[in-house]
Structure formats: C-alpha cells, structure tokens
Length: 365
Image (cartoon, rainbow, N blue to C red):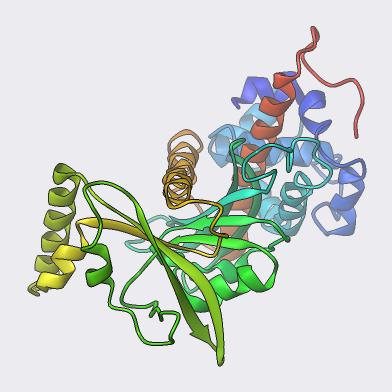
C-alpha cells in the first residue's frame, strides 16, 4: 500500500471501516484539537503515510504539506501518533466484526473454524533483544487474521490469550504446549492441535500411569502415522487427548539431530541419546475426536506453517519486525498502525474476490 495508492483510493479504503470511525477519534482522545490536522480522516491518512507507506516522519509531513493534507511538523505527528494508539487498536479490531468472509462453511472439519496461532517479535532501534511481541491468529484456508494482541516481552505464548468459540480448532507449535492453555481451549468448547514438548507436558495413559514416549514411537512402522489414547491432568482433573506421530524421512531426521547437536553446543552441553532419538519423529497432541484420523491431524498441523509465511510477509513487506520508536506509547501506536494496514489489505483482497467492474463495494455494511 504505497503513499499514492493511499491518497488516490482513500474513500474506498476508509469505506471498509465502521460507520462511526471518525467520531470515535474524538471520543477516544486521538483528535482532541483540530489544529494543523483538520479531521480524523486526515489524521489516519497521515499515520498510514508514515507507518504503512514506509515514509519517515519527515517524509510523511512533507508529502502531507505538498498535497494540502496538513501543515504539521514531524515532532507534532509523532505526538499525534502517540495519542492515537487506542483509536488505531480499535479500528484494527473493528475489521473483525461483521465480516461476511469469516467462518465460511465447508472450511474443513464440518465447517469448524481452523485457526493458527503464533507470535513474532518486534525490536526498537539499538536494541539487541525483544522489545514487543505480536500475538497473531489466522484462519485457514482464507489466511484471514481474526485476533491479535501486542504485549511487552514478558507476554508469553499461550492459548489462554485467545478468545475461543465452541467448535474452534486451534493449531500451535511447541511454544503453546502448556496444560493450562490446552485446557482453556477444551473448557471453551474447542479442540487443540499442538506440537508436543515432551519435557514440559507430561502425559498419562488410560490407567493414569505416566507415559514414556520413546517406546510408543518405536512401534511405528515405516512412515505410517500412528496414534495413542493419552491424557493429561490439571487441577485434579484429567483431560482426554490423543498422541499422533510419524517417523521423519532419513534426511529430515538427520537435519533434526544436527539441529539438536548445534543447540547443545551453544549451551556447552552434550545431548542425551533419548533426545537425539526423539528428533527422528514428529508427534503432536490433539483433543479432536477419533473420527479425525491421525493422518488428518498431522496434515492439519502441517498447515501451521502458513502463519510463519504470514509473519515473513509482515516483516518483509511492511517492516513490522523493527519499530522506529523509542517510547512505549508511540511504539505501540506504530505497531497498531501496521496491523491496521495489513488488515485493510486483507479486506481489500477479499472484496476483490467478488468481481465488480468498478473494483469496490457500493454499499457499506
């Protein structure tokens, strides 16, 4: 979404926002005074010129001055952005509401929502670590974002952050393999598929005894998937689940073992033989019913990589991976503006699937 497109097609873009989006700028404190910026539409365009079109603050205000949008300094724009964070968050969140493209029937598993969750890190200038974390959920197969949250580095990956509806199927990697998170999904009426972390997620068998993974995985024949009935306990309650596994190809197993050895060398440790053997398998935990077979579960988990590709697009195309702000308020507003741009692009793409000769919807929802 370059600056020229933002300006030329502005009415089409803002037509995707809720009906009262301009009034909300004042009620949420983003536009307390009209000095230098005459209205909410001008403010949002200024913000997106900077955050979405990739212009620096100085470039954005110079472009705004040239086209007669606003006469404002780069420092003043930064202050405006700092105060617009809650408003930008509300606009981004509003794009999830009332969308005709959500929860399409036939999307898989009898029309159940299939959702993939992950988190990506954002750093500030001069930082050598993580300053912000963006938690992001995509639906399959549309790859439409239906939830996000921005936290500081202490905001860990967990299913407990997600609003879960009955029937949801949530996919996650090892970072989401916590009993509390999986229990949250089940208690909310959904089901989970998560890459099992053998060290942090103890499993029990039907008899309540602890399960040793390797003896089970060694029974796999060739590259045929297998499954076992298991469970886990939390707060004196036992949850039913299944363990689904498959043996990796020779090349993939060797790559996994090499990765384990490299990580162990970094920590000046020697990997255990059991850890190297476990690296030869893929095993995931699911709470889905048995009529969703082990091959189906593993194929669903494979689709989790779509969210990794989405993060690559976010970071490479929109520069979400590095935030050019130093104070928390402006950094958070910048991230919200980026996410708003991504969600607007998604909605524009969805509208384009329904052909119209003029290229946009005539009626607002």
